[in-house]
Length: 143
Image (tube, rainbow, N blue to C red; front, side, top):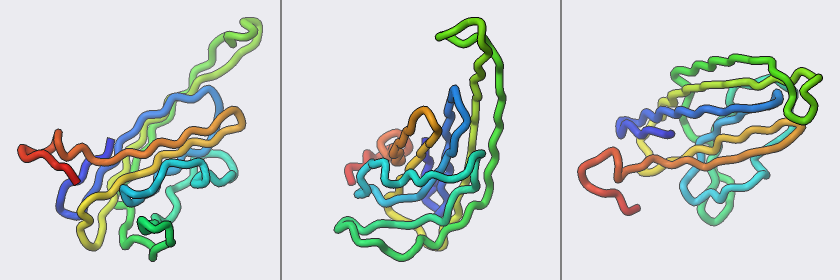
């Protein structure tokens, strides 16, 4: 979930359950950015700090980096061992990760979205999340 506080602050909340270790990346993107796996770049495990945020113009041209910085971030991780589904005689683990990050941007953006991507040996996942202005305000947002 992404929350636009309208005062140039954005809060990002997400939860990810995984059966293997991997990299989680959160990036600020414009709403026109299409979801794709090109944002996933193999990197050493474990969880890295988010890379510098970068924007792409609607025409696909790279734009200058957004003038934002991470004001607060927190990650809670819990790992549980249990018998593997494919072979109960072996031990597998699941990892539960909860993360929160708040960005502070130098100037307000009308609409901003985030990519949350996860890359592991087993699989890759990318999700684009944008603020739900219909939910947060009395007046619906149709932009």
